[in-house]
Image (tube, rainbow, N blue to C red):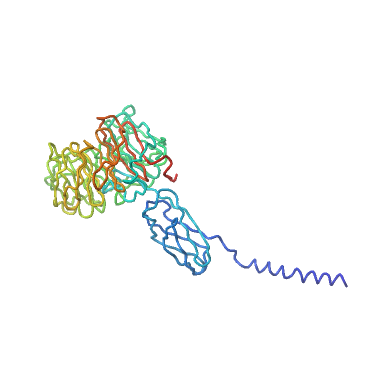
Length: 497
């Protein structure tokens, strides 16, 4: 009897525990809160989409980037939340930074990382050729004098070469290594270490600047326009005819790859992913029935549905980006045009070389080609002007750097001390960077033209033609035979690789 009672007593003791365990098994376990961001990489002021879960039902979720508020989101009944078009702070520094979501009631916290990284992916940074970094948060007028050499690597055997581009932690440049008839170099942006090379087999000195987008590098190689894998250098496609002339610099805009070819001359549009030809048109000044064809010396400019092309006789034409149809053409002047047009709003700016002090900058209505104003800019202007904060910066081979008001054409200032300038200037956070014929890299105050700093990067008299590129507090510049990077200190930038 006692045995039966003990059994019943034990059963009564265990039963509640068994029932409790069964009850717990029916309750969903709480999951750790999550947060995801898309895209995961971008420049300051990039707009991102945030998605998260694991918050309290219907609670307010505070969103933060480091110590900066990004606003709030509202969780649903399941604790999930979303926030679209959230802007990364415009003052964000390069590198990986945490984005946090915190439940205001529950205190639940979720984090993810966002990589702040700026690129300079094609000639003069963008297809409108502004040559400006809109959110440079490392270098500025107050600290540019502390620039120091980060790395210095050999790149070629001649002084004429294309300009560097910077994308996704890599630097790409076309060189005129005459022993191998030109190379496409891919360098680590942080160290200058060579990652891969591809031969160009160019019969001439290479002055083309490559372009980078969607994991592909575009450049002329083996006489054809070629797309390379940006990480490995593997050939993705080859198409058409293309050589190393400056005019054949590839340009990415409106989802297309634009370039000019030596025969015709022709203007071509291709699909960037496959190389498939979308259209090809003759480039001329005048009407189709009275077409004057001249050699093209300058890179083209494209964007917002139009492509702008200049020629060696001072002519210029605009073409529809979807069909190649000529929209307008005109003679801007009678001199050679070496620099690419620059587009801002409804205006396209173009610099004519000029000789004996007759160089001029012209502002045209980009819809019609009508001249709005013209301004003197010294002589023998070979560079593409830079445009930042309503000012155009124009290099002259004979009279230094000119700063011209973009609205009126009035002279803001001129800095003659830098001497002959053939590089296209770069502008970032109030500083203008350029190379001059005295072999120095200059940093000028963008407001006044005052020389803030200069560094000897080549022998005096060596003609510097590659234009500088600026990204994440580093200035990349080529001398033709060498490629260099200057910054505040080694390792200051997280490239995110």
